[in-house]
Amino acid sequence: MTAPTDTSAKVRATLYLPADVLEEARDAVFHLAGFPARLTLTKLAEDALRAELKRLKERYHEGKDFPGRTEDLRGGRPIAA
Image (cartoon, rainbow, N blue to C red; front, side):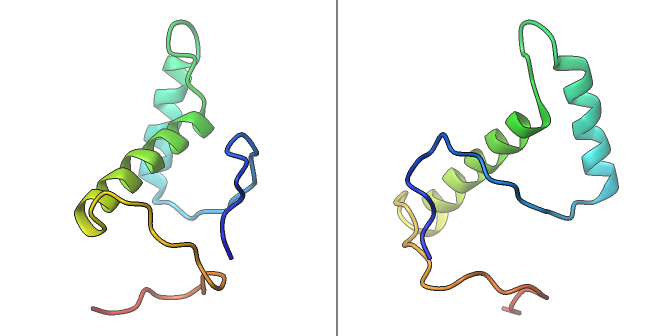
């Protein structure tokens, strides 16, 4: 299953984060919501994910996009290395 091609489309995602990380993010958004940053929790999360995806591509996939998935992700514990 591949991701939608329309990059402007927003979809809802449920994630579990450590409480302290979420609280720090909310604090930052609260203080940066106005001019000039106009930060939202969605924008902060999107920017963070994009930066981390770029880092992962550069480190593990020669800077190229990862291939599309052939099936949905499975929940549960990560696969041990």
